[in-house]
Length: 124
Image (cartoon, rainbow, N blue to C red):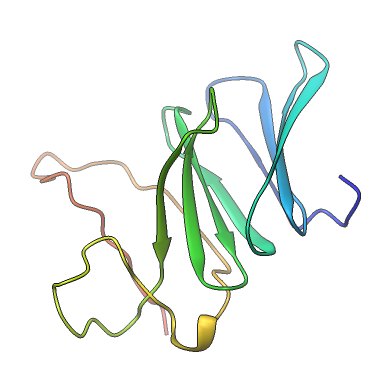
């Protein structure tokens, strides 16, 4: 990275390290001694891996959560955080008032009654 690293997260199942800087992220492989980097819109502020290591999420200062596949960086979703749900019209659009940063991310284990939906919580 040419800018300061904002967050790091180790894959729970492989030797990959996810590093996020101001405008890009990288997957570092200790086994292969290489890095795969990609630009990202917005300044990274948080990152996390799914429990099975197949996907990772990056939160940005402008309120977005980018969800990507670990093998090829295919973007699965880009959600915009919204702490006050005004309607059910935008299922994949979540916006945070004033574009506030997403400071922390965490994947949770699915529960037996999990219906496949994604839940977001505002700790404020």
